[in-house]
Length: 423
Image (cartoon, rainbow, N blue to C red; front, side):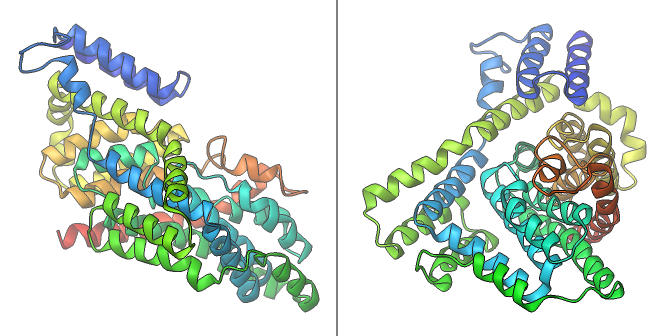
């Protein structure tokens, strides 16, 4: 088993560096470790590689499918576009330049939460130039817009690390998404209020004419009422928060959307399946990471880590998990790469008796917050926003982001403590 554990540790180190394809590394490295441990490929033995792979077929895959069926038909019906535009209109009306940017960040985060890939540039290409036109600093505009990733990663249903954590802790979606939403919104809100205060201090007055022009430019031309478009989404959120099966909630809300949009069911089904096409990455990640998790358990690596770190971790397993996850996100600058540290450590704290929900919030949240601190995050984050906001600079924008991330981590710490207290 010692050889197998060495192979697994080498695999994890490769994943942490981010220099190799993360999902292939997890699968191939785990298979090599299992073979080194002497596990047969298949057969009647208690532990086989086939059984470990099948262990990766977690029920959370069904939840992802339901979410993507719902988001697929929301997009096809035009409801998603109406909701997005209305949120950005409200942001503009309420908060001017900081408001439109914060609303755009929230919208991009919601899209990322539902689809698994947060792209703040999707809304920043519209909100960024509008905000700078209204007098906001380009670097601060870019920094606020790129906060979308925190919400998308931690409040979502399909990011590979979020899925791996939920499956490992066996908690299902629901309250972890609520905690993620609270943390993500707190980060966006911190930068928003900071910019509102700065613009008032600097004496920058809002140009009502330009503000109205921006607001009008965001209006939907579809003719669909906002209350009609938002209702299926409200029902969806209520369903999973109340603890109903996410797959069933997603499917029922998708059917309700089709009926509300007066869409033929055949067309609605096609839209749902089109949405499910987005499941490719989280599906491979879920199976791969849970296969890896199973192998680590069976070769004794989790027990080894627990034996070495147990005396330290046992004092407060959940809080130690939170800081380990934060450090992993800070060092790797990637929520996906951090999974190589987060999942093994999560197994250790669960083995020590930690509350699954509190431990999962700590595991998923720490890296989701801190992955952006040093550089603005991986390729789909701040760097893409800089490209669509003229006059912005990545280093300056990232420097502006950092206080909000620290605040978000404090909010996360409080949330984790509350969840742990009531466990």
